[in-house]
View 1 (cartoon, rainbow, N blue to C red):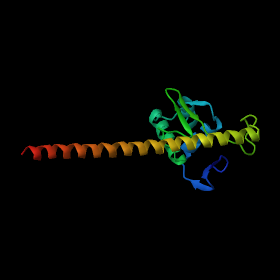
View 2: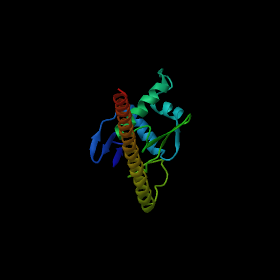
View 3: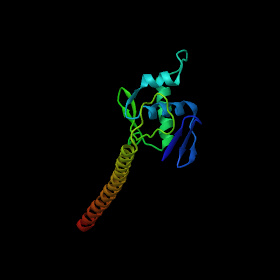
View 4: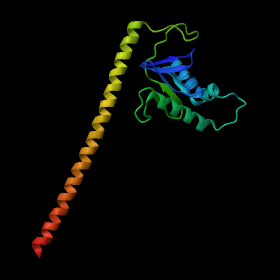
Length: 165
């Protein structure tokens, strides 16, 4: 479980500090504060860089997203926290619980709804991870079976060649 401490500017995973540079930290704060909503690349650019900054924003946004995903231990191809919304931006899809006073974020979800949401999300995440493991096992099985068939075919050909002599 992650804890994003905005005031102390730190990210904790199960109570342990996760190193995250200032820009990716601000990006994670932006995404988490807008959980469930698409945050456009333009919104990210505005949050991470001032108007008088001259950088390659596209590469900068990509790099910052990559760093956030690494900090969360996420694979972009199988997102559990940050979903890429093609040609629009990104969406934080994990449940977020606001703790303490968070001005400007609106009313918090009732505790029971949030607990149910977290439980459902956790089950979905576990199912996705299990499916990834099954897919990898299937690939290994198919590769192994293909190798066995190839060896059997070669052995069969060698056997036929030896019989003809």
